[in-house]
Amino acid sequence: MILSTTPSIEGHHITSYLGIVTGEAIMGANIMRDIFASITDIIGGRSGAYEEKLQDARSVALRELEERAARIGANAVVGIDLDYEVIGQNGSMLMVSASGTAVHVE
Image (tube, rainbow, N blue to C red; front, side, top):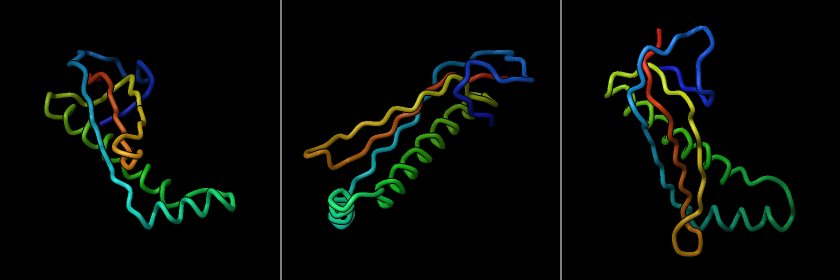
């Protein structure tokens, strides 16, 4: 499966457009991660715990998008857009959504 943020794939011809596909992931944060992130905010630097959680959520969303595209006969998804939101009470959850157009390419 080819996944691309571009509207076409160089070297491939899109033979059919199969529809919009999406994938979502909602990940909860935990108290220990929040405490370490707060310390990082105070002393400066990057929050590895949150970066890892963000990477996990993005991977889950893209994997779900890919699975949905495969179920409808696609071998590629073009025009992928990733959106990130903090949701839940006090911003306690991270949501990543991925959407794109499922296509068949040669």
